[in-house]
Image (cartoon, rainbow over the protein chains, first blue to last red):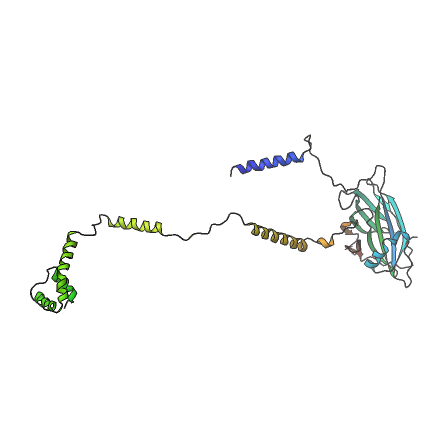
Length: 169
Length: 168
């Protein structure tokens, strides 16, 4: 029975030796699929203000919304999606970024790159959505590139305002 | 009245006297074969008295104790079934299969989403926290895994009339 601590110690030391590099230096393992931006390449954030309605003869969505339109139909139940305005901004991690897709709905964005594996080089964003000068909501969100976040805004006429936000590499 | 056999024994041993002897000799006349056995019985009695077959025991309790111990030692005991330290191979296989089944059931039932909901697309939008801007507004997160849509759902916002231009 007294041999057990010695055996465990020996096993632990063996594990440490196996984990070490041949020259004795320990290394950290970094997930291989975490995206690292190329030097000099700047990521962007795109935002749009969408007006969703249910007319009898719906129009085709604009090119910017073609990718999202089928999903928006299912989630919000409208059949027409128009872009009231959009804005793109280079992401600056050091300062607050302002996006004004519509003067009615400005967005303040603070971005910090996230090491989360699922975000694939995306960002942790602190968003502040305003309706003119009134703050509507503060949101903290992790966004992978190409994964849009939608914000259901106020009712507009017989439709609905939807704000969309997407990180672009 | 003593039975004939008892009187016969006493007669052989020479212990009958007086009227008992007379009475017995009358009965003996009716059993001539018994009278013929007297000589043999006398010889046997003399032999037994001169050569006692059972020697007197010096320590009868010790003898009994020894005897009982020997009997106990020689009596076959019921064999106890020896317990194996490890399970047999089939038992181990069954135990392994049972553990695997339990693990699969727990994985399917306790892990949120389970295997069937693992999203193989690249969509990832995870809302960490929402703070509504005023007390009349409520904010919640709606995620539709089938559509890969994450929505920050605001309720309690003021209605905007259609005459109001959004991009003025």
